[in-house]
Image (tube, rainbow, N blue to C red; front, side, top):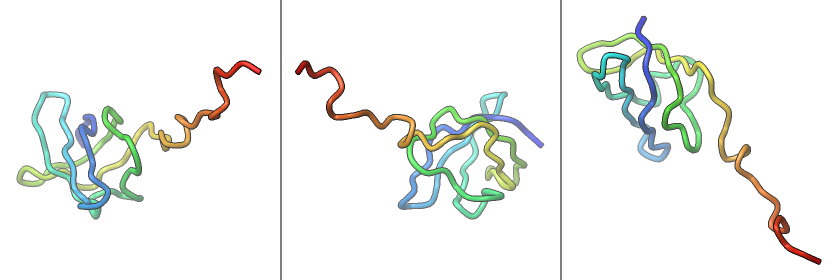
Length: 81
């Protein structure tokens, strides 16, 4: 198994790029994730994976929380009454 970071993943197309610790980039498809592909912003998420001819397979996200939920803010924040 190798370790790296998810550089980007396009939910609509179902593809993205993973960069290994040694700087090699691998393509990744939605079907290559062990559980489910990421949703929302995912650049920099740590992953472990196997490689097969320039493609990342058996990809597991190590630390991932849906950033769309984490970034929600009240529309009233910063307003004075």
